[in-house]
Length: 160
Image 1 (cartoon, rainbow, N blue to C red):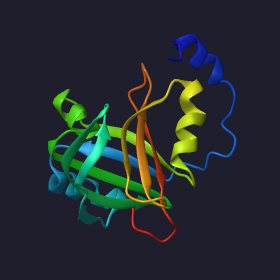
Image 2 (cartoon, rainbow, N blue to C red; image 1 turned 180 degrees about the vertical axis):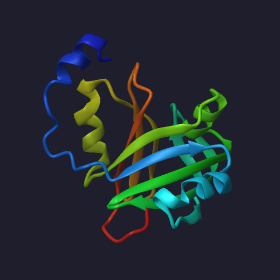
Image 3 (tube, one colour; image 1 turned 180 degrees about the horizontal axis):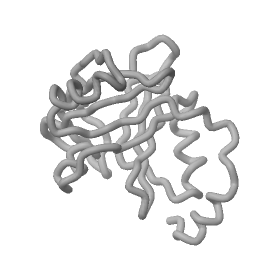
Image 4 (tube, helix red, strand yellow; image 1 turned 30 degrees about the vertical axis):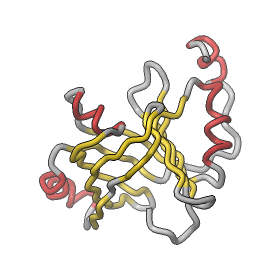
């Protein structure tokens, strides 16, 4: 395990090859209310069922029910996520009494390789799902940092 001092030292070295953040995710209690509130800034929104089954969450397989809305600010995707039950980082966030900015996403070519590249910075995967060799996501956290990062490996043009 990486200590806080080791992570602080590693954080001074830039991560070469990391693409720009392409999404900011917000966990909300009421998706419709949040879409109406943020429509002038990030709309129009489109929605989808974002439920995930059998993802590895904190070392065990778990299901989660999620409703998601996507908007934009220029090229940056804004994701609103309503947790509807099950186990995921979103449920932990809501159950801790929080609502708001939750994660930032980076689309990468190899999720597993990026997980290893950010370990020296103190990041550890807490939620992971591999649908195929081409489609993989992971959410990572680090001690003392309220914002998670997400790596998404998905072919261009595929929704997500």
